[in-house]
Image (cartoon, rainbow, N blue to C red; front, side, top):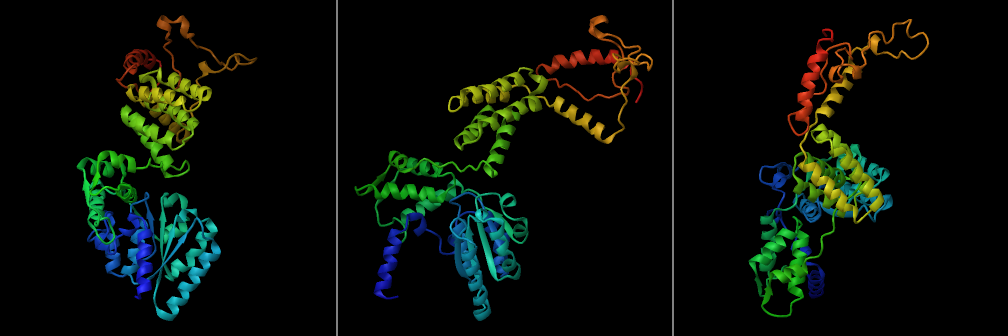
Length: 441
């Protein structure tokens, strides 16, 4: 390398943010994702066997998808080429694939093609990749923050191994921050930094497993301080951390996973977790009508008659959201969510209608008992319709001991929780009187 080349390299490195400068140069330096990259795990085995095929990296930002793609190119001695699905079209894609085919034919060297945000490629663009992936012309590494089983062609997914990246743990984030502080060549090791333990933990906690976010906050805090040594306090850490942009796609994973977490938290009677997931969805821009509809469904599905007030409350919440709108209707939603979470739970009505529907769909359809059939039209009497029907209001306690179904069935089985305790007691007495009039199944 000439002096000019060295100067250019130094200038380029200085212009890079800390997170880019601290990218690992080898797999041993890579932090995180031990569930597939640790010793003996699948990706490590594929590299040792020199059988790395096309892969899809799926996970949140700042977890090392781009970095690992570069390392894989180095490990496999492949030419690294990168495209962004946001800015590249079919023309650019075909050019890279043509160059990769020529290089493989003339030199035997493979090309590792890294496509960032691959889910943003349309179907036609993804289909262009299929022949080259099948023939092994390129080793495709696609990176996406969206569930590939939803957003990428099934043909491409079936020809690739999917590796799901997890947010880095607090210990892993802490390791990266301390490494950056100590490295004099690529990091901030030439600065005298006195890191307050409380400030370090604040950086770790607020990074949410995103290494890029933690290192950016560290760099901002250090470079914006003229004093030496740099007293990196909790206050400096707070001023250096930007408000996290909520990763939330109303058509993708975040939508479905957050909705699932909200419903399951309410069903599990945890109002604190339910409020968190509600806030997460609201901050992400979720449709308020969607949230209100889900609460109306849950009120019957998971609370039911254990608390008959749950459904009217949920319906009132949906109406309030229409009348009030955001931001104030978040108070209505919070009230409904906490009430439903704390309410006694029962899915007896849900189970009952499910069993009844199954019988209707799969079993013999039952005829309406003659005494229950409509007797209000001419000729009904001649058919015997309504004959023997007992008007319930004329019977003791308003219960007529007669058969309403024709066979012995029990679909609704109240729990012993909430108001269903009372319904269960009542139903036991009612069924005892009705059972005598029912034929054997």
